[in-house]
Amino acid sequence: MNPSPITHVALLLLGTLSVNAQELTHATLDSAGGRSTGGTITNDATLGGIGGEMHNTAPLAGRPGFAGQLWDAGSLDITPQPASMQESSTLQLATHLTGDDGTAQPPAAAMTWESGSQFLSVSVTGLLNTGTLPGDQTATVTARSGDLLGSAVISLLDFTPDDYGSFASDNLDDAWQWLYFANNPDNAQPADDPDSDGQDN
Image 1: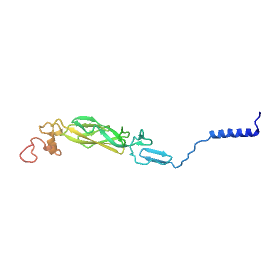
Image 2: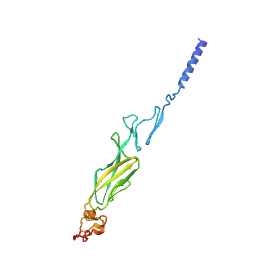
Image 3: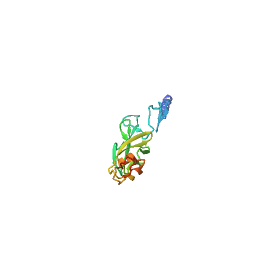
Image 4: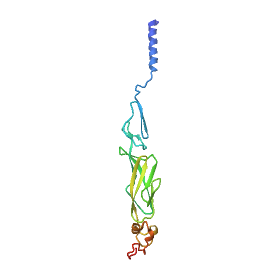
């Protein structure tokens, strides 16, 4: 039995609707999105930007277990801390970033180092070096990564009391000579009497 003309039209419409349904595509329904930036992060969102404050320091990474949150460095820490060195020795320092969730990551930004003591030098890699000392000293070393600053206190220990510079090998304690004659070492010799009290050094 041949289908009626009405049946043909119905089948044709169903076929057209089926094809059209398969060709439908999703459209953007929300145009309220925007871009927000914070330091090294750019956020493109359909409902606006994320709020809050971020350091301008890498790395910033997704925080496991917290959807949509970022790991943000809160401090730059130096190890070992505190530390001690004897004279004429070296010590390698290391750094890590501690995040706002208490976890640590290695710094990704370039590190700069500085020593606050004339008796202690620090290389671009954080290697400390000290020569002979006029006595026990305390030094502060600082490291900077982006906008974060960390510091470490280093004790410098003098194990040979008569070996420092022009004060060496004269049978006088270097620490005493440095205390009184650091700015005028010519008056620090054992036979000198710089205060004219009748008593030599």
